[in-house]
Length: 109
Image (cartoon, rainbow, N blue to C red):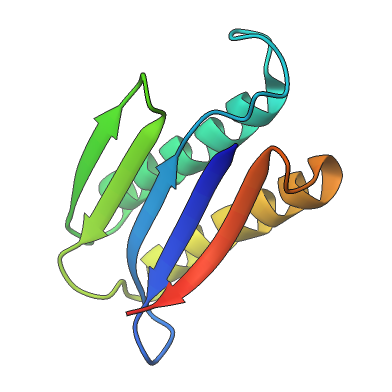
């Protein structure tokens, strides 16, 4: 299962994104759930890096499926819009394939 945790401060601003695990929907290379989640998360972080002023540190590990991005400060308008869009996509994947393969949670920090 892929566990995606979105960390937000008390005012709902994004401060961290952690994604870890593999969906297990199909064999490696054929797993559309894993591919969908990975594409959404990686594309969002790439867009934030290239299109906004947000600064973050990211740690990745392909074997464990880890993508952990910690923002230097709570994200602003443009970063929020990109992350909101990613969340919509992740929620749709979870609805379509169930929480057996991906689980999206939010945590206040």
